[in-house]
Length: 124
Image 1: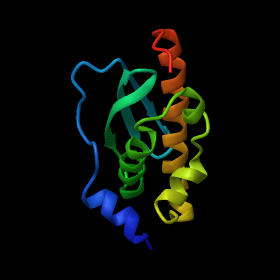
Image 2: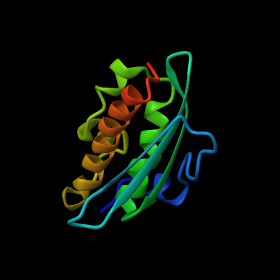
Image 3: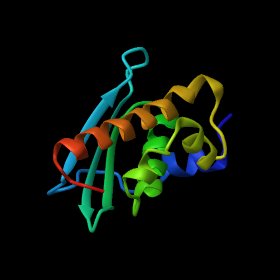
Image 4: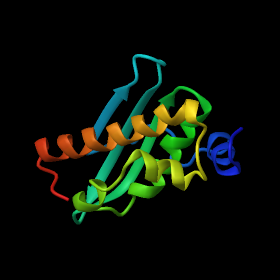
């Protein structure tokens, strides 16, 4: 049912945990399934220098949070705006249709991150 990449990111999440001194933190949720994704970043020289996530949700939601932090590290705002649910799902070797909402939640988190970075005047 799950790809090897989904299982790997679920069992060995990358960049999981709090990020002390984060420049921006966002939290998004899916009220239908109850998944919650918190994304925190530090910015340096106009790019994401560090990214961490916390997730309360299904296997796929945790895997999406993990792969998202890997994907956004080093990105500027133009690159961040290109992150979509399908790119997250593809990076995981595909996700079950019933769990695609987790990739969509990751996309929403990136959108919220871009908005908050602009508000905080943390130009990327």
